Image: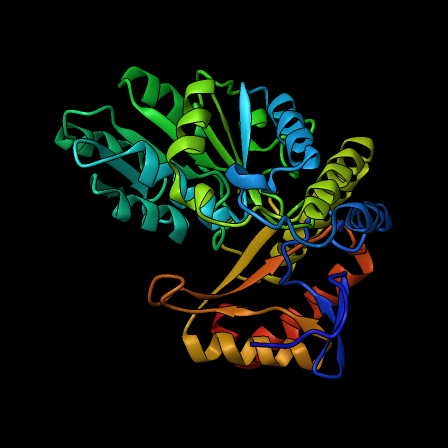
Length: 374
């Protein structure tokens, strides 16, 4: 692992070298925003740096309550519930809402936390081929007697493509199944107001009963939430071990998230600029014949370049670093064998000039280490 010595930004200091950072998930460039930092600092001066207890003991502050209410309103759900991390939120939802009499159907490329939650639930656990609704439909007759759960990422973290969320929602309603969506990489980025792929697909609470998202990506802080009906949220509050038996996120973090939400709403140009950067990169990849995985896909901030060979991916990553680019190689078991890649991710803090520099570095490095791909 690398060691940074500065705040997250479009360029960061790594092991004594300043690099253009194309590996972060700080999609809106808010992790080092003065307004977010000020909100954190002011709240820390009043509430301290730790919550001091779990939410159900005495760790739930007025700032936590304000944030939950703001998230419920923003997402159009009855209630929202805070978690200390996205991993814990995903684990909590599937482990709490499903049991031995139930069935969970998951996209093959879902995040590990959803997979782990499904396996820990005791429910029958099925994984359908990536974005293959026909394969899902062929599996559903094997469900147990309880109401089935269909779980999916919205934006897949290693591929950058999107779930067919509207189609999944329609199918789930047709089959009387509960749809669970982890919008970690869509929340703050997609949708007219930044409320994620759920907003972009126009899915209300009835169509998408359980919505999960994180604060550590587009909003630049940390933690996560689940939004849904009164019944869903109260069940999680009373029964989810990942919520009950852990110290609450610091109140100052809640204040920082509130500030990030406010900035995101007030500055839609951040999302617009991010999309411009991604589109510019995709056009550049096409012009340079770089192996973009989904050239016709959604303009998400995750745009991987498929290499295939593990060593070649490491070599290309090392080569672009010589040109002041941080673009981390992703290899099995994180991705399937034979699909090692450079996972390029963008931030609204980047400039067009930085993207051009990235493209030049990639073209040189692919020509040197994987000429058959360029």
